[in-house]
Amino acid sequence: MLDIRGLRQEFGHGRSTFHALGGVDLHVGRGETVGLVGESGCGKSTLARAVMLMRRPTAGRIDVDGADVTNLRGPALRRYRDRVQMVFQDPNDSLDPRFTVGRSVAEPLAAQRVGGSERRRRVHEALEEVGLPTDSVTRFPHEFSGGQRQRIAIARAMVVRPELLVLDEPTSALDVSVQAQILNLLVRLQTDHGMSYLFVSHDLAVVHHMAHRVYVMQSGRVVEHGPARELWHSPQHEYTKELLSAVPTVHSRSHRAGPTSG
Amino acid sequence: MNALSLGNLTVTYSGRGGDHVAVRDVDLHVGDGEIVGVIGESGSGKSTIALAAQGLLPDTARVQARELSVAGHDVAGFSEDDWCRIRGKDTAMVFQEPMSALNPCQRIGRQIAEVLRLHGLADRRTARARALEALRQVRMPDPERRLDHYPHQLSGGQRQRVVIAIALIANPSLIVADEPTTALDVTVQAGILDLLRSARDTTGAGVLFISHDLGVVSRVCDRVSVMYRGRVVESGAAQRLLRDPQHPYTRALLGSSPGPGVAPRAPLAVIDPSQHLEQIPAVVS
Image 1 (cartoon, rainbow over the protein chains, first blue to last red):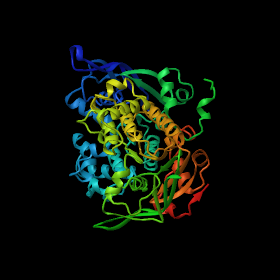
Image 2: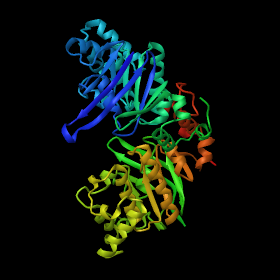
Image 3: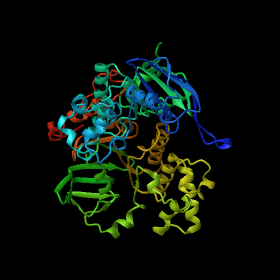
């Protein structure tokens, strides 16, 4: 559903130009989870933001279902954001501490001009979907734990029934046992609704768990992409190999060490 | 001698909301030349242990223990002055965030040498030479030039190397590393973990390694203690414990971590706090 071709993003100009994205191609199919991995500064978050059309790219184009969305503005851009939503690493960034949970979750609906009892119904539905009691609507973010806050952020993204969720390090600030709950939730939501995910993370184990296909980025470029299993077991690019060998895992290393076919 | 011996350690924080027991009845020993991991999630008490081992607990903390021995000193009745005499010299700390551990306004050579100067271990010239030596030991590229750099001129990994150089320079018997690689990229992390191991090999210091990351602990530690809600629930040889965990909490923790041993998108284990797994007797292997 999402097709990115030759995407470039430059900051600054002249000799001090920084190439955050140096011509990226990326494809996300319907109902598919695509992982995007790399280390700090590789451009993965810039790419996530580009998909949200937060900043006009220097060059290249972004298609959704075959239609060019790169330069959308006004009402068309608002309609685009009903189809594509984002969840950030730190739920505190996406939830206003002065707003009740109900108001935060309902906010994207205002742009859709959904009001009254329909809005209330949709908010309740979204909260139930992420496993929070509906009486959460009258409470404030500080009354919730970090994991619950991330559930609220997911409910807020889900409330407009998007087709693509851009998840930027959605569990990096959480404990492993809380991360497990959020990952389980994301898998279930995808099964129930058939959404596509663009899953951005520095954590290769998490991406291997979640993604059908993975793109590895380094210095603003995609150095390798392919099915998650293949990439994990037989990486081709030197950088992917380096990244994988640096990952400390408790699960037996023989999974990775032995030669694999395919 | 043990670099660190904690016997029946209990730490209670008192506040307006009443008392909170952060660490309950913990036994923990770090032998010389040994790297012992303490692993746990937020609120498990692992950082309280790190602070207790450095005399850095806040005034609101009450400490009870049968044994409290740090780098060969009985620190049970230690005053702040007593701690100042051994901190940096006999026991040293590596924090998670190198940028907040370093002084942004001082050249790094001076910050490394400061440890020796404060403890009266070297004069200015010798201290600078030893600082250079320490930077070589932590494999800092271009160490002569780095001596006169400020922290902001270094990368995150290089800054953590400086912090480790500061920790190593006075040859302490105990190094407490509290999440030393959590803020770093994986490839940089691998270098820092190797460095900690080789520092242990060359100096024979004991290392208390605090982490939330099971993979990191299995890569660097000889033994490990798993903490949950203030208690040690399981302890033993790192490789064996993580390969074949016995306590239900350790099993759940491992089952909640995604990795090649878990089928993609299969449900991960969830830990239910209402089960009070911390009350199940501890396992020592």
